[in-house]
Image 1 (cartoon, rainbow, N blue to C red):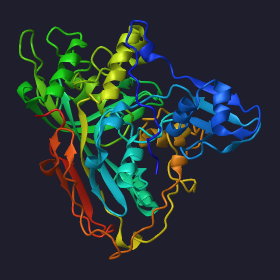
Image 2: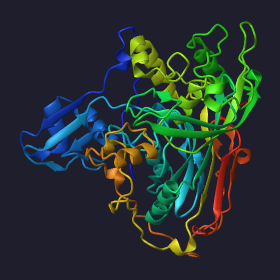
Image 3: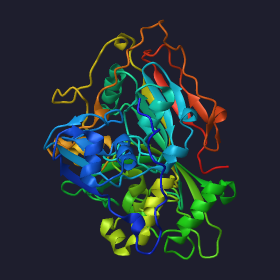
Length: 479
């Protein structure tokens, strides 16, 4: 278990005009002058006090010979001339500290768990923070090692499946590869998007915001999603937090009515099919729309970028509001520190009105129970897909982005992560301590009443082979 006991509390960043709140991450590359214990070595090489150095070690911000150091390895002996990489200003995720993680466990079996990830927290370890992340916090809550099996953007809320055994990890990876995991999202937007299939093509850049094209371009990745419904959402039904986000978001959108200008016409995107746009005129009441979406591909920032591309910006999305939609990172850089600060605030506080609300997949088959399967990729490597960091991609890159990079032969070997070791939890045999049903926790999930909010499918003793369904009934932005 990884515990956060020694981690220093998150310190509020300065918000002055100099932009210190957006100071770049500092990484120090050093070599040990003499052999000795790790903690004193770091203090000596970097001029840090023991408390600060221990905090960096516990957070997973220190690597020795490209291997992440865990919280229990402070006294390991570092050989002379050993290479150390220290992230001296790791990115913090305050929401991870303020979240009641046991109440975020939606369902659990001997083979997997489903959690309701809060916005503002990564799914898995980043290069400089392995503690304030969803898989570590959920593992702590369940006192068991969990393995994040798919991803959500940092500011996105909602359902995430985490494996507890190698057998289920392999099984779920195969389902993802075969596109047999069904995901639906709920978004709150400033205008209704066209109903039906939306197709765009994303520039293969590692930077954000992403740039899309209607027509195929060489090297671009196809993005497909289906808008299932678009329902008017009365402003009067917004929660207090959501109302604050809407007001702040409107101030950053350059339109008199608060509605974003369209980036692409409906006719260009969907050939004239779909519902009618209902943009507000100046002086009219703000109109919001709750949109249900089914993903068919899983690109980084796909829903955010595609909705902004058709002029239906998501509430709270400072990165993809109409001012920057489809203009790339240069447009944001031209604005300077101000917009970057707003984007970081949106990510850190989980103010994005986008939530993964529905998951459906087939349970591990009965004959798979008890097998010690180890996930393998197409090359036979017994570890499944590499992490985004190992591919040289951003930490929030999607599984599809990792697969595309693998096919293109762009793998970059970087620091291996101790968290990538497969969990060693033993598979439970049927009838030997295995649960017979999946029941949601009854604690508090934010401001949402869990008992009426969560519906879970029926799962027999952790290996039924049946189709399982998990659904959040209410969004965080609704009263």
